[in-house]
Length: 296
Image (cartoon, rainbow, N blue to C red; front, side):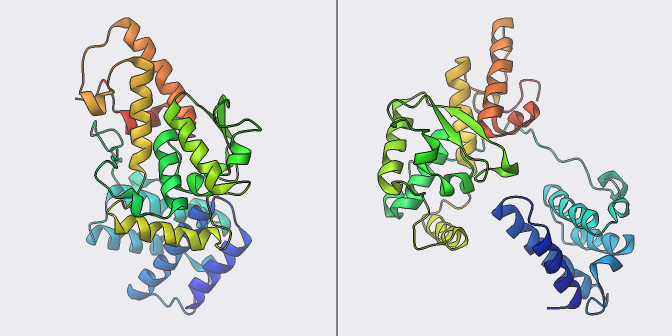
């Protein structure tokens, strides 16, 4: 480990904002930045984080473009650089993305990105992993939320067949935001009953594992059956919920049609509800999951 990476790790230890997954990703990113700067010819074994300047950022971006890194990935990396710049008191060192020639990311494509599990052998998964996946499917939970899920907290004192809503604890969620998700189907209640049976008064992380240990286990099991990233289950939840609320398929599934005035009102109301249920605070984000009626 060179001096620059050592300095990065010291900053990470002092600034533990964000979820466990966010912090782990940030550490990987900063370690990669240190290595890439070393390869680019900078003396990272003599550098401290406070020595970083605009030329170092330019060098990283040049290399990413040579490597044909996607716009979305570059923007994620820039977010970590901005976080670092703020922590070392050099927030103004990082310019806006347009200055670096980083194109706008295309969020809305009207492409169905949902994940179906019908043809996957979920029975081969361990009970804790399988039930976390079922909760992602039934409630649109993020992976970390589904792993840390504690039925005792989420049900708020109710049993699975009488609870009106699911409570998502801030420590499980991205950005530490509490939210509630309405329970509207028998399939959801059955999933909660199964989770309660497995977890008891604990969570869907086995007692003999830490979150980090179980995350590795989760990733290995899902990769083995070809499931991989489970984010598509949030897309599936959003699409099913939209159909339930509006009565038609969202544009990402059914294509673009001309909406009646009544459908337009239902569309807006549904998107507001789904955004809240997914744990987002921006209505526009629903376009990623549902598509847009104005996108051709």
